[in-house]
Amino acid sequence: MTNLVIKNTKEELEELEKMAHMITLEKDPSTELQDDIIRLPRTKILNKPVSYDLEIEDKVIKSVVAEPGWFSIYNKTDDMMCYVKDFKLQIYQVQYSYQRYYPKKSDSDIPFNREKNVYRKTLLMGNDTKDRIDTFGGWNNGVKKLGINKNYEHLNADQQNVISSNKRQLHIYGIATCDTILDKENNSVVLKDGVWCAKDKEDNSPTQLAMCFETAQKTSFNNLNELIKKVSSKTGVHRLFPGYTLTMKTRLYTNEISYYAIEPSISDFKTIKPTDEFKLNSSLFLKHIKQTNDWITKEHKKNEGTLKDELVSEESKNKTEEFITTDGIES
Image (cartoon, rainbow, N blue to C red; front, side):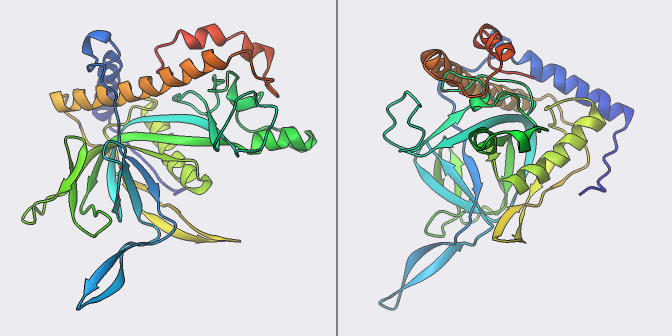
């Protein structure tokens, strides 16, 4: 992956600039979708096989639907999980956030009555180093400065724990193309009107669906982010990549422990026409990002002032008003 070279002609770069401008215009309220809640399927890597009970000649055996290293696709609308071996993902938006895990009975200084394990979450943004508000009413999940901390070794154990537990998360919004998607009983399915439905047995065409792929797993994050940064540096257009498509596959890594992570590749640039479908997809993803950030901002305002924030700087605190008046889509 370090030898990857992405080349763009002058015409392709001009096309990307036009698309970037067009998608930015989609922020105008006159072009927004209706105020329905946007729910996108979420995709994760499977670490364990998924099987179901198959009855053969009065005997019940376990039949495997999906192997470790496949992807799960969860659709919240019908609360149903399906599975795919690999897929292609046309990139529309790339966003970054941070999340910090709080087990149920830990961190007694947190002033919330938590009946279950929770994640403290930050705003989604188009970069991974800019300060941002979080759902606990603080900044950066309690970290003074995001990114590499050169003084990490000199911090005390509590400060190191705050930093190491604050995980970067990558959110890639796009249109996925899947050869075959299977439900938990090994039936081929498609997503129609927001719910999983049986696929016509005579339909051999690939299935397309809008999704948000998210990962905080370090190897997957780094592998994907390397490609994204290379494309961004070549095109000069940050987080607007609809001319490129990722191939999403996994491979087994064997270090101290064995695990699966994304081993992605990326296509050459493909010119995209500004069709109504393209504009609708752009609006869909932008609204989902804004919807997410609106909720995070609401939680921040509700909890602001109740939290002893461990490492937040005065500079960050002074920015609060700027963040809570934003449209939620940061570059």
